[in-house]
Length: 388
Image (tube, rainbow, N blue to C red):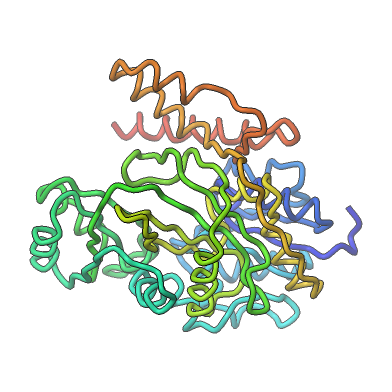
């Protein structure tokens, strides 16, 4: 690719979103750099990744991470940086003074970023936008948490105040935990920091709205319904399908994003209640795990954002409905659970191939990230065996 092409540096090239982000940007004519604190990093193995960089883990020391990213960006003449995790976003935003003016970070004000990664602020913005929110209690200590759980009823969702937080001087990262009873909740509380959040759990279909917020609009959108998650009751999406979205829902989503003040790529997750009402449960102001579905279905979100940020060109793309997404190694765990339980028909349904399925790693046009992912899994298995 010509050296004069606009250049984008992706952090967290080890994450699920990285190979698809590289493809989105590479096909749009950008020079792409992949930075990671881990090896192998599937995004760095993509044929759309032009340069590869080693950087520290943002969870170890946020300032050292931001300083390393700034040095890489300046030396490599990158025009902007796309964080691939909350930890990277928080670090770059908090230390934006380390980045020269010629690097366009595209970040809103610090207080906006802080609010966007806060699960408490999520509830306020959702209500202001006309979206429902599951009953949620902010708990200052263990006693408040156990009392709130008893009132909400088990199982109950335990969440940190934000996915990356500091507790006793240590930087921690947690998503959510479904506590089946008091003993399980009590055993996990210390790992989530205080204050923490407890949320009423109810079974319902999950809906993801991935998009781009730019110029007061949502020029890129990909709406999908979850089919499976891993872990099954409170995990990340392992299989989903794009769907058309009602205009009134998109209006409320637009109001929600405007209320947050966020600009850039995002994902809003909602859950469908018994009456069909969708309630907001999580907001990811960054590249997100199932990004491959949006890109494969025709909404190239990273390129849409960078086109606006660096080229002042606003492209409007909406993902076409009926496209499936599958996170293969997570779905294989579903198969094992079904086989072990004697549910062979359910296992066969998970394994059944479907043409045109979007995958985060396995793809014929760019096969190397799948090999990197296999090596990642082998490393994880080895660490668990050594730690046993």
